[in-house]
Length: 487
Ligand SMILES: Cc1ncc(COP(=O)(O)O)c(C=O)c1O
Image (tube, rainbow, N blue to C red):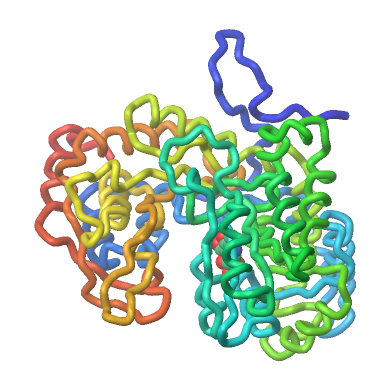
């Protein structure tokens, strides 16, 4: 039976509303605290949304990582987990799922996506290596650089445009790839990395056409292609919707085609299968053997890889569910709805809508703030204060400093409002749209931030900042003027 998809449920009045094709059976109570308490929580958290306690949060849109809703089948599968240090049946069920869904024979479990990045970087990268990719991810780049590699982002000219009609802003620019190989020589390139639904540029997908072109060049020079499949389900969904050749293919066929174009596939299960954990998979035994002993050293034995066997069971079920269009289209459908509504209200958002979340362009939102005052971070703090919604800064705070201690300004300054799969309802989504719109109308009240405590590595996680003026108090005063005692 062909399953209907969210976008295909029509309303008689023509409205485009994403209908949930699931029902909610386990719920968690949320708290929407008064605005003064939200301001106090934000100040205590050093104006960094990573530092908030969920006790103070209404809608947690920080990430989809480890926060997607699990299905009834996933939860029930955890009950028959097989506790064993070695040879657990849970692992063999997960291995079978990876083999079936991704078409890769050799499977290594790891505790999450960055653990896979550590293993792959240690196995294949050494000093002087360069690694071309569509765009970096924070932990990916950190591991590659730690092992002596340098990352080159060879995205197309469309990739960083906030508003574009390009359906595949995650594509690699083939000319830039060729130029990089000519410049450094294939022997200095251990692999080319393609990230599905490119996270840091707005969850933008690549096309299979592009991946085929990348693979053809890689084969010509004997370079391996590595696929970061953490958000592969959504990328496959966009391929089905946007790439003519695949419109009648099943998601499973698209997943297999994508994975077949890479010699090595790795993933964060926190995203792809709505669980915890991660994995690495390949059809090449020699590639597998280069990594196997590192997994034992850093993660745990090769049949659990630092993951609880209960999660491994749920991972297996979650991977099969990645082939279900109603599962993988849920988050993109809600994102598309939010993006279109905000765009119609004049709020600058990344278009076309991508995977993972609605991405607000903080530079367009706050043109009066220089990047050195961290507009995306300031916007994240302001939105939390006026709504209890926690988003994530994906801009210069998430970047690094150069050797002279100056900020390397991010290419794009984004506030990401993640839509974990099947977590938020439409009325909550409408609340998000309303509060972002209100904030946009009062945007001139938002000021900048500066660091008061700045970690040397991945500073966005644990860094503390302060406002450059008393703008948060002024924002609260305006909120009270407009909303009175309402939350
Ligand atoms: C594309 C991509 N790769 C890798 C990772 C790292 O995965 P994890 O958070 O499980 O370590 C993430 C996490 O968000 C990601 O989005």
